[in-house]
Length: 174
Picture 1 (cartoon, rainbow, N blue to C red):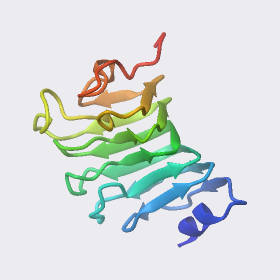
Picture 2 (tube, rainbow, N blue to C red):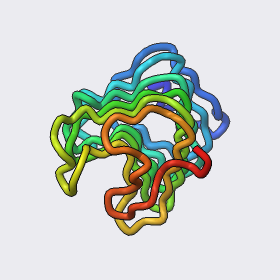
Picture 3 (cartoon, one colour):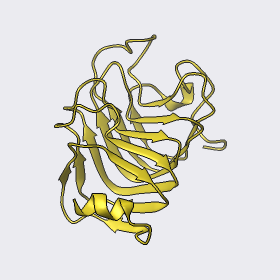
């Protein structure tokens, strides 16, 4: 409740977690905010939502923690930028799905991955295409972007870019 209240309070621009949180309803973010997980975890195992952490507008920075969707349904995405922009710094994002990804960008969103570990633990091939399960993904026929400046990626190589749009997610010079 405190987190949801902070996310709707326009005066709050920095949030620091003090414990792990089980996310059971959508965290919809519609403002500029930095969320420091301070070593804690957003546990998505008890959600049935496809986008439990959904950035709709603003620039949102997540840092220093974990988003764990590895035990969530295989239609759940760890972090979804659906109109807003996202910066990921020192984050760990885990999924276990042949259908979805750790991070998703849509509706013109821009995602910057600065550091961390992004891991799709599925042992199955990507369900809607060839190769390893997705780690990063852009909505088909969308203008969203994902740029990786660092990090470790287990699953589809970010240098291969999007499964439909191609290109590369690796920032120039990295």
